[in-house]
Length: 238
Ligand code: CA
Image 1 (cartoon, rainbow, N blue to C red):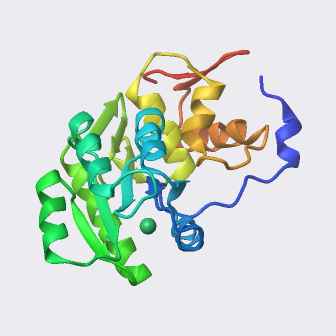
Image 2: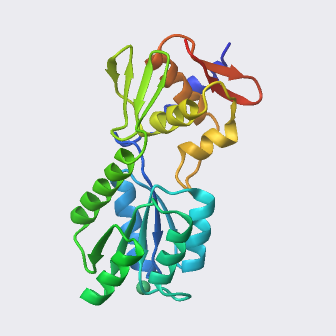
């Protein structure tokens, strides 16, 4: 039984691509604001901090997919941020952004495990292309296909197939299904799923989760998404 109330509200508009969660560590507010907006328009979910220690904290708590790191930060050198980040997470892709476009710093950063560099000022399209490439490398470096019954979700390409047929997903449907497929059979709470769905700081409409679940059920067919009243949802083999 589902409540008819959500039919009154159209689902929120969304870009076609699934959102990579990107942490931007940059103390220049105007540069960061412009960059964050441009990246959101490209379909990234962006969290922005202005200090190195806040960046390291956000990496622990928010588990971003990618990091853009400025080297000149107010509280610590960006290369120290990179060193400490790498001590805890060897695989998280990091793109270093710096006005100090010198060979020595590039070599130092590469030794510490930066994946790529871009010198300011930079071209937005080039930044986006490099971030996409980093995201693809991340996907291909891990087990890239989640399967459950007739469902197969490739997390490198973000493609779903149902009974071997490709099925288009919006970025939020993808995020939701990925979370459910990572823990099949387990009930994920509304809070957990909403946290997966939305970029940091974005408003969450109260019925949005139900709307996305509804669309996902139509696309998956069967009854594989189970509603647990008052708690959340789980995924089972249909
Ligand atoms: Ca700076």
